[in-house]
Amino acid sequence: MSTGVERITVNGFSDFVALAEERARTAFGGSAERQHAVTIGLFMRRVNTLMGVDAEREMGLTWTAFRVGFALWVAGPQEPHRVAMMASMSRAAVSAARKALEALGYVATVSSEADLRSVVMSLTPEGASHIEGVYRRHLELTEEWLSPLSDPEKLILMGLLGKIMSSPRASEYGPGRVVNT
Image (tube, rainbow, N blue to C red; front, side):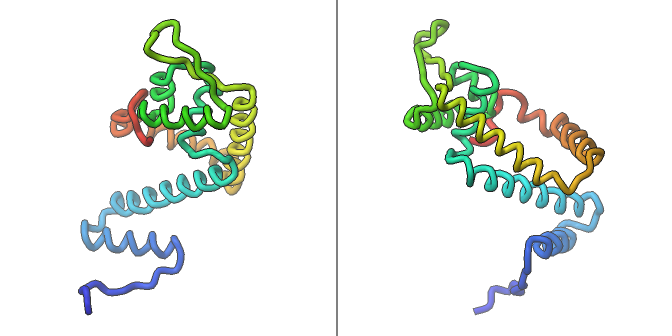
């Protein structure tokens, strides 16, 4: 049974990107800007995914739980809604991660003095040690990923990513906005 679509063999991600560029050019027109958007978008997503998988494989936590623990490690004890804002997560995701981290003995909660309906989350000494170790390893992995770049290239990349993050499109996902739960 024919679907009317030619079956193409793709050998590796670079071949897939080239094919995606060609399909986009055929379907949407051939501007250089569009071609760059295809390539850069696919490469950024791929690197982000691979770096995340690389880090998660070793940390023994979900990415969500790590983000909650990391927010507490950086900012100290916080109410869940503040953790959600810092980590760009939903309150429900923070609540689920808190329960998992409490079960592991990494997070403790006490009643909030400011809002009796809420709690204040903090890392236990074991939790702080674990998050610190995970983050140290995360930085090592990031350094490995960035090792093909020279120091000036790393500065250029930081500047370019910063420029993208301060663009009007990115501002829609500003502080406190849920991006990824």
